[in-house]
Length: 557
Image 1: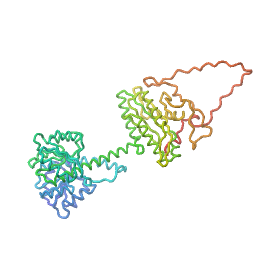
Image 2: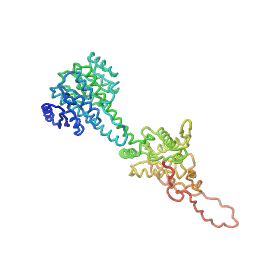
Image 3: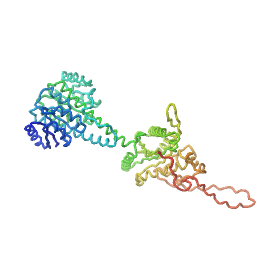
Image 4: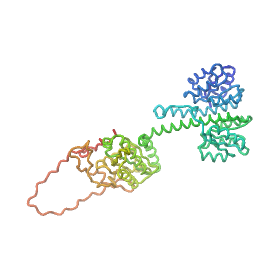
């Protein structure tokens, strides 16, 4: 692993010594001789880790670290304080100022390299989440960025794996200061079992377990999907530094050496809890932004972008498995009238209730997405034709069967809502279809349902199915605001597709022609009447004139 390391020290020999050690491990080294220069280079050179001396003229290491950790542009950069100070009070002060570790001179080379590599790995993870958060920020999907040091640390859930009771009690007593919920266990097996059942903010593992290998336990925790993101703090002896270095390589986040200073323990636990909560928040922001990008904010349904990606995967999956699926296009009838009559607030509430009713009447793995305006697409995977038609009818009745209760308690409104549905069973073993062709076909069926009077379900190759009104009923009158004189009660012909049937395989076949019944001869008239020419069709709507029916007045403004 290589990384860019910023060394900050006002004594040139110290800088050269660290530079030689790090360069020998193939790290890219940059240097600064003061706190002010360190702040400038941290902002312009983007180091992966900063090794910071404490005792410098002017701005000392504590102040420099404080500035670094409170600047959102540099707060994510790990800081290791390297100093001749050895007092526990100084270590605690450094950790509380935001430093990730505190190494005393002369620096143990094993500890230094292990710590640098460990912190660089952690930074790479944080950087990935920061990139995603920044992308979401550009679209205004998340709020203002914060820093890890501003995260809370109180009330953390801590798992302590230590077989020495007096050591466990020390952790419990110390962490009560922050109202932490500490769970001590005596064995790794108990710890793993609890970690599988609960969510912890940090796990403390002793390297001195009498019957188990603490490093093996760390490896198991890090390789398990449920626990791999939980910070691990290992506890060892001064003589354990090589094992500590291995632990950091395995994936432990931090370590503390015995005899344990209570304040240092508290500071290190706080640092890890803050870091975890910071990463959890960034992950939650990213997931929220992803959800906002793929879902309709008004209804909570998936949007068109997600639908198209989902259909691409479904087509491949069903083709490979030789299964069928169904697509339904659902259009809310006269939705513009609802907006114009009751207001857009009532229209929005109608869409929300509609989405709820749709989801309540579908299987858990079915998908419903808002396609645009008042149009929705329902995807029914692994389904046959009969079941698909039943689902479509259930959706239609579920919407039309009960008025939508909108408005306020003071001014309640009951709005009668109906839908028109176009459906198609997709069997790609019978021939290839593009997603655009599928959507076009079910859209054509919606037009037929609208043309036949709305509140109907039409399927490709089958025509109207189910319904509460006769199939040849006249088209519903247009809303008063958009009525055409003389067009209210003109009957529409049934679509040609209705004169067909669907075989068990879902393939449309033409029906046999219907032979007219013979008509009994009437009494001989006195004189044969002159033939009457057929009446010219009334100029009503677009459907009567031979054009596709228009959806004008049915889209959300």
